[in-house]
Length: 147
Figure 1: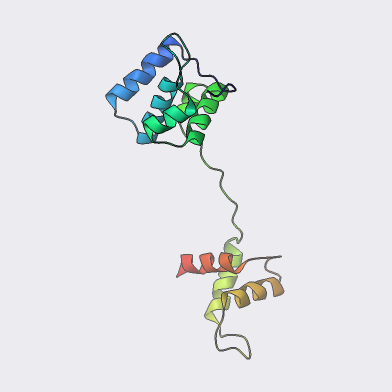
Figure 2: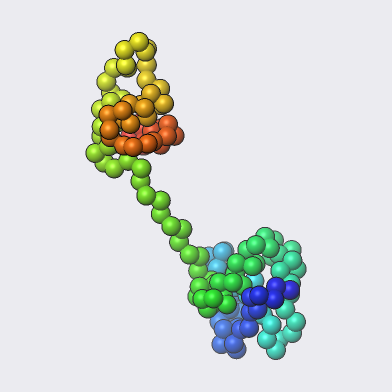
């Protein structure tokens, strides 16, 4: 059993989780997390299951069980049931830079070339001072978005 994050549900929390599971009208992820908490409970209701036993019984990874335990101990019942939003990544190109890239893509290829390549566009954007550094993959995504 994981000694670091021990789940001890109060009577109200246990009732709330059991009602949630019996009703079955919540998102699948939320129901699975509720089942994990019920099986991991170390209170008077009997011995808690190990992470491996819970993992096999509910067909989830042991890391998922660990994370649900951790979220409950650190943040309470709501934190354990609701998945945290992933942090948003910042955009490499702003609107003005994307417009410049599109204008560049609509123009003719550089001298000595029959057509543009993603790496040529990336190098040209850096050469023109539009951005300090950029990968060809970022260029691909920006151009794909605009078709």
